[in-house]
Length: 231
Image (tube, rainbow, N blue to C red; front, side):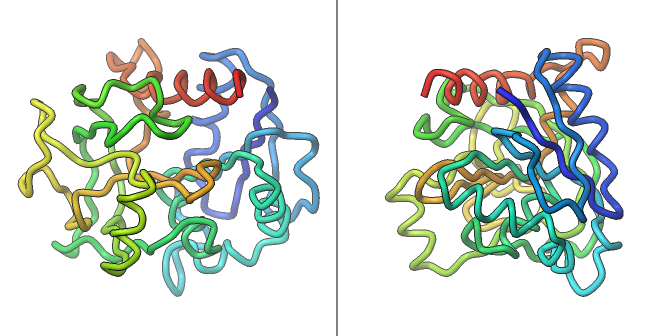
C-alpha cells in the first residue's frame, strides 16, 4: 500500500506524518503538493495538521480550493481512503467529504496538551482493532476543534456508527470535564457513511514513536492499515 501525504502552505505536521508512515511503519509515501493535479498512484491519502493558508477566513476554507483537493474528492467518491488530522479534518469538513464543521473552542483559546480519547465503536478501519474500553493518550493542538453538527445529522451519525472517537478521561469515562473544546457529544473524530474518509482533531502521529515515550497513536495507525490491507 502506498500513502500520499499532502502539503499545503502552512502545513506543519506533514513531515511528522511521513516519518511515522515511512520510517516507523515501513510504508511507501508519496509527497504531494497542494498544486498537484495527480495523486501519483497513492492508495491512501493523508491531509496533515497545521495552519493551511494561515487559517484565513476559517480553518481549511481556502485549502478546500487547492487543485489537489479535486483529486482527493474524486478518490474518496470512488471508495479510496482519506484521513485528515486536525487542520486536515477541518479541510475534509469544508470539502463536504465529512459531515459537520469545526468551530472555535468554547473557551476561545488555543489548546495544546495531551488528552485522552477512546474508540466509540469498532465499525470502521480506523478503530476496528482499538478496544472501546481503552483510553488512548493523544496530543491535541488547535483553536478551532469544537465539532458541531445538527441534531438530525448527529442522530444519523450515531445510528450509522460514524462517530469514531470521543474525548474521555484517563479511566475511559466520557465526561464533560474530559472535553477540551466543547465538541458536541465529546466528539474527537468522525467518518463518512461509506467509512472510507476519516477525520480527527487529536494527533496520533505525535504519539507513535517510542522515543517520545508514548505509542498510543500507533494503535490507530496499525488498525487502519490492517483493515485496509485485508479489505
